[in-house]
Amino acid sequence: MPRGVQKSIEDRIAAIQMEIDEMVVRWNNIQSKIDDLEAKKQALLDEHEQEKLKEIQKIIAASGKTPDEILQMLKGA
Image (cartoon, rainbow, N blue to C red; front, side):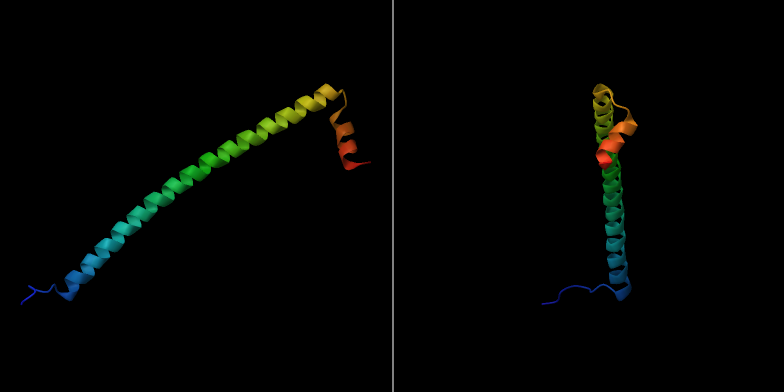
């Protein structure tokens, strides 16, 4: 039983190239989304670090000691 007309090699190459191009576009979109999410994550990590630093500042101020005195205490000198 005949299977129909077979596509030329050029047509098959073009079809494969089209599929490759589509995959590259999808990959670029995914990479862009990953980059955006990484930037948002880093912004949240930076914000969290700033909150910790503010809390440390409040504790130092409440202790009545100067930052230099605290540093000396932490260094063990």
